[in-house]
Length: 174
Image (cartoon, rainbow, N blue to C red; front, top):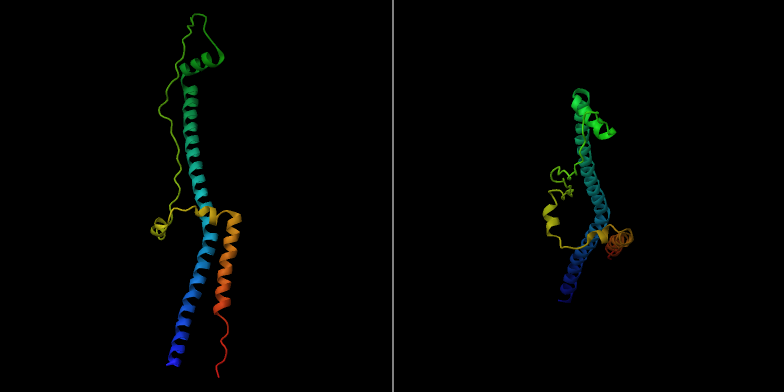
């Protein structure tokens, strides 16, 4: 009876030892991968937002260029436009004209366009997993260089501890 009990305990110990080994290794790799992937993901997100900002600016510049092209074409082909420009810019008036000062009211050119960048969402494969994560400041843990270094060291320590504790050569049984 004692032999079976001792034998069963060794089997349980091996099974639990394997589970603890894989638990330590997986936890270490999970934290290690987050320390590597999350900062890169945040950098990629910021690059995408910067790309959206530049596209918005390019669109704005395109509209400005088109407006200036229309003005240049009007200056080339419409004498009334040239006259109005000379009157406005150079204070040119014909002798037969009378000038009257009129207070200007600010012209409303329509609603201002506002730009709000859209942050990229996670890939579809991991979106359900990310949606289930609790609200926690993960960037402070995995992206902050000081804390990130500590988490990296602890992750590597877990992996080294798992291999040190559970991958020892077994003694030869006689």
